Length: 116
View 1: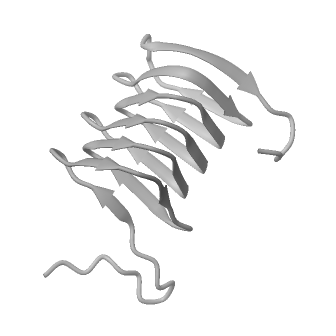
View 2 (view 1 turned 90 degrees about the vertical axis):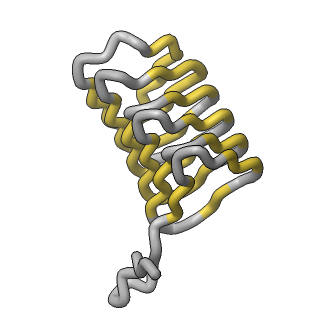
View 3 (view 1 turned 180 degrees about the vertical axis):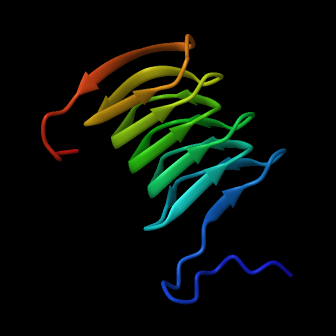
């Protein structure tokens, strides 16, 4: 049995594994890792869309790490977009970090404050 729980914080990451299709909303105060497909709204402190991972829906997070595919709007404080990432929709951010990417076909909206 795997134990991912941080015993000091009592928070476990939420992982949608490769080959998994999840339909519905995910809401957590911790980390969400998507290696498969999520159709719905994903809300968390940190959302990681891994290579091969895909979200069809909305993302709300403090930090987004986008390696895979995002189809829908995202409202984040810090967006980290990597080389193989693809996104359509609207990306609303305070800080945007793009690393050698040419797959963004989304609207970028820079927010000057912390309002989501």
